[in-house]
Image 1 (cartoon, rainbow over the protein chains, first blue to last red):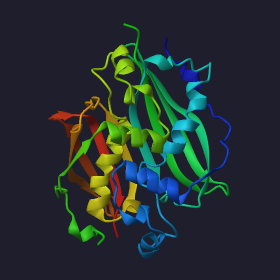
Image 2 (image 1 turned 180 degrees about the vertical axis):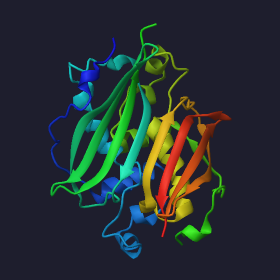
Image 3 (image 1 turned 120 degrees about the vertical axis):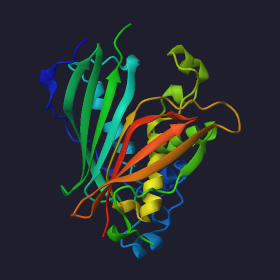
Image 4 (image 1 turned 45 degrees about the vertical axis):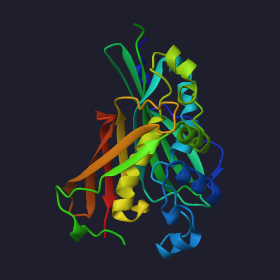
Length: 148
Length: 140
């Protein structure tokens, strides 16, 4: 089923606040085999000029994955999740995510396309602090493979 | 030591990064990321949806790949933009060796504003698993 182009620009309510913890950053860095002390040791992070430990460049996916669910589950979008694969992912960092950040995620439908029977849905998630400072913008493209 | 803009030019190669991904790594990443999709831990379900077996999370592959950039620069916070396109799944066998992941990178563009674009080539068993992997780093 082709996705409705009229969905582009549709916004969803902001998420609950997510408080970024040092241990969560360390856990994520270890899962990537990333030994950089700026993810693990507050003193090393401060020596490198950061206020606290910073997250690896792909950490935002922890928040954006959840935030994008509201789009995937929107009945008007009508994506067949059983046929979905992750097609593309992009992160634009306005500054590094760091421990102590209290972030709110807001999802928007960024683009829809249908190519050769495959539906492609791009969701943008803006991650901002409670005070409204934009920290990171993520874009995820999901492909729902057409029924064969 | 942080890389400086004067250290790079178009064509500069990054050190090659070779790593291995095992089933234990997939379990650890599933927990850390919250991505509990069953195709990353059940051969039965992976085969039901037409895969040869359990595959790595695309974002695990992408996260390992960008390590090559942040370690080269010496500052993960310098990565201001990172985009990937997933082209082929990384099948992770249920053994001690797992799957091999090789990351090569090259500077593709150097901007006057200190922004440097690095294009990555990410392969497993000789096959390209990301058809696009591009990082932009801000260098001082």
